[in-house]
Length: 227
Image 1 (cartoon, rainbow, N blue to C red):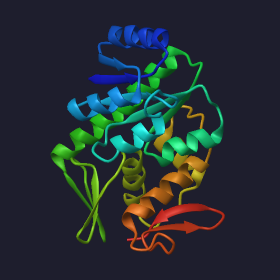
Image 2 (cartoon, rainbow, N blue to C red):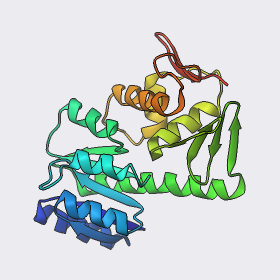
Image 3 (cartoon, rainbow, N blue to C red):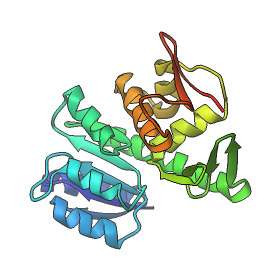
């Protein structure tokens, strides 16, 4: 597994690199957003650990740009602890979030959980690459969704959320249930994380996101998929 660490705190980067390499990962490191984009385009990474505050190009812009050409899982890291920063990270395509200072054991646990899910979906796709959910068809190997002739490239978390909903059509799930199921492992975020990802799915899948017909809300209860 190959990981890219992007952070301008060189001592922190050195510590993360040492610990992750001891876990058996192949780790590349850079200290600014410009170099991060260059390596992300050139190499095939399994995961990126990305700081929010970076020189040259900020972390949010780096994350947004990477999402234009890659679905690689991204963990955002920042000294800021405000919920608005977390939501902005998710809006730009981040899959997870860690606030500094953090325990390296927590970082390794987050990485293992994300990579384990990615590998599980990849192996599942080898045996059954298509999931026909009525108007929406999921390609489990490419982790994309198609509505009619429109194809949507989803982030890993967006795909996980959509797959979970379409496998239980017309079943309503609360925000808390979705947060615990999709993010899990004692995720420190709040239920607005779910709202952000539902909105992004509607923008990518619905003809009119303001009037969705596939991913619906049952007011006061939660979200569900209607085939």
